[in-house]
Image (tube, rainbow, N blue to C red):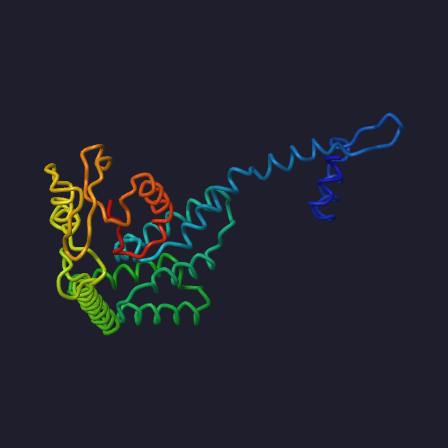
Length: 292
């Protein structure tokens, strides 16, 4: 079974080369007298030579080398060239010859080109032309690194490295305009919300259907009405107020009594209506409320 799996993965030419070089090592005579390949022995030899942990580590280092740029190195060319060269050397240490110099030089130029300094980019272009024209006979990766470091040091000394390019200046100006626009929009929305809310107590501009409240959030209209409706001193079995007729109910307010509208003076009926009302209260519009 293992032999069949490996034959489906390994190229036929590689398989033949591997087995033919040491046939006696990988084959055995089966019970039926046929010569067969021991797939597990082949797998062991392959893993011993490939070393999967090395492959994983090298891939990680290659990804790191690919991702390096000036931004990740604090915009410091010396730091970038040091990191990218040490990573490249570690790759070839782990897996000798797997990452050639030509390939490394391409990655080196890519990383150095992430600068926004136009003068440094011009110097890089000159290096690339020399590298191309001489076919790398005289321009090695070490010469490219040395030249890039020298240009960087000179520009840093002369105060030219940190100078903003026209592109940077435009980006900063654009960012400032965006921030300013955000502040303007937020201020406009805040002013609009204030006008729509009309203040905490439902003043001018507020929702005309919403009941005014005090600082504690209590419904002030209901509090005033409750003050006379729940008066401990009964003023009579019936009472006329605000054009309405009220009837005293001794069962309301836990037996303390309360004046109720005449059409709702039957306590049991009122209680049933209240229970039903609370069941559908979630469907009411904002500002609606139910008097007890």
